[in-house]
Image (cartoon, rainbow, N blue to C red):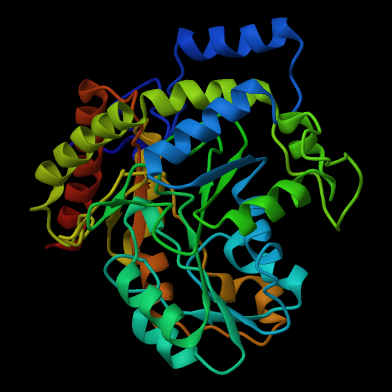
Length: 396
């Protein structure tokens, strides 16, 4: 049995493989440089318009609005639909943004459990938390795999509830042939530095509703008509005056130029991720006490994350041992109800067993479009080395 690096043995790699890494080329550098040289670096410039048009076309949506984060897009989705003074259902297994935005609209937060096998929000848990005050449901496509959107949208239609799709992980994923981000009343995307399409920081609101889009344009420009003033040059008698409440959610044209180049190759980048994921699946599927990701048949994933389930008793040691071998690994979301802020709202350990189990058992392995097969082989070698040592130590 080969000695683990954490115990003094030789590591599989000296130069560490990160969990994620942006896939930038000369085209992104050139595009950003050209905008900087032009001097037109503010928000809602020509590159923003081009990116928004191309993104809307890619998603087969009517409107795509480029903003400074997915969190801002989520907030805009509530502002533009006047969703307030009720309840918002969010999965507990998610990043804070999906839930916290409701507090700014006086929406009481209702957390829901996840599916044990996918990490996505549970339909049964949604139904168990519905009441006459429910105004919004925010499903989150964990790791890139879309949620059961037909069932969620049906609940929304039957009860007059807004469905806002948190597709922060899911650019390029699909559900029954339709692109994630355009599967609900409103979709929200992220272009953060760890995502599949990256511009550093950024997001987008996706909608097919003209009124929602116009309200979003006004709110993101501090409550002014600036967007329309710039685009229409006051031909319709609009002014740049303040017409409503608002904040500053616009995004620089520099980042729009980068996002535009990323969008041109998003399907290629996701295909590269898929090849790595399929290699992992084939190599890891027969390991004792290890479960590879479970994917439902009527949807595709962009493999934003690659997670495996490992024995909880060994999880933390496996992560430390992999890092010692030169392979970055980590846990993912601590369920919201286990954070201090949400404990103060009355949530307690044990309320959402699937989410707690999912958190306890999964770890992340490196996956990004620039990851070479040779590097993925090192990931597998290190993972098997660590797991086999545990099997030997545990006598299994």
